[in-house]
Length: 492
Image (tube, rainbow, N blue to C red):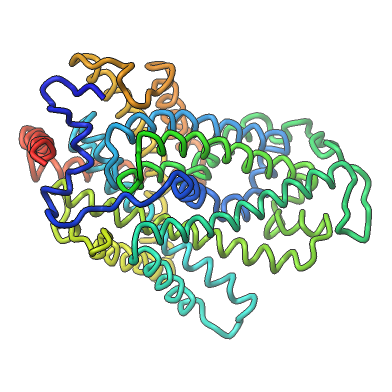
């Protein structure tokens, strides 16, 4: 890649930034494209699809739910297209705030990092709690808190050994979920046409009769689709984890774009395919009252022990999301410390390149957030969860904006677009459209009583991050911090 004038090949030097912080040990590039794909799928496919998809269908109607997920997949594609260019240019671990710091400003990078770290560390507590509750189906005498500790210990060990062990574990965690979804799509599609070989009963072909409801194709109007589309954005969160893992990826210029393309394609097939099958089999006015639409569909097609199978799959889905979340938390703390925005202790690595202190602090805070869900369910936990939901879209907006300013600066300072190892297509229209859609979703939250709390807590949190950064460094000092770290990268 042609360097930016005056930057001394900065994009090619950034991957080695850790050399100035930790001379003897670095994060190791041990993950392949298949690990990246499954990490992204692991972060995306969770309880939202397995448990809450029925609610989505009930609100938007069968056809409306499919449209909402197609809109969500389109937005994910736009964000991933922007992420690809940045992740190849800056393949460093926990890279979201690096993108924003270099392209927009260090205060924005600082805020993005803490938003994303908080988003996942809060999610850890909820994943552990939900997994513990589901385990009581088989072990009713074991308290939920004990399962939470057991699952936390397992995920900690998987992350503490090495990045490759984490990647392998996430590969198999995610594979279980993908197999369950593919099974639903294949068996459900056969049942739609009247073919149910696993069932002693043979119901007639449904085709798409469920799509026509008493209220028409959109029983709650198209506004139901719009409101559902906003929630679907959150359902697709986690796909950006590819950027977090960029610093530990072999041959990032080759593997990151491949993983991004494959991830978007798989998400479209799995999410939209599953929703289409569920919508065609379950009456929309009954979908919202089921514990899991997957259980209902599997029982409809005659899968034995459907409830137990799906209980196992959902637990796996929750632990997979927690596994990816813990990885993300540790790398974000490591990257913040490397930039001088968190204690230097977080940059310490094990012999296998794992930021163990950052990992330990993240799992402990995750367990604390678990306690707040029990001890202060209506106060502290509500604040944290609201910020976490707001953070997802805010981080996506920072990724899109970073790509826009990164490309503009690259060209302005003499770079040739054709020399970029990966180029976001249709620039500048693509990042502008993506940013506009994400901004609309943020504004629309104000009109949804179930989500408006995210604005009440999310906007003040963002403001507090900016104010703290400017208070500590000053506006002029903040720019100097950014230049200092770029200089350190060049010296490395």
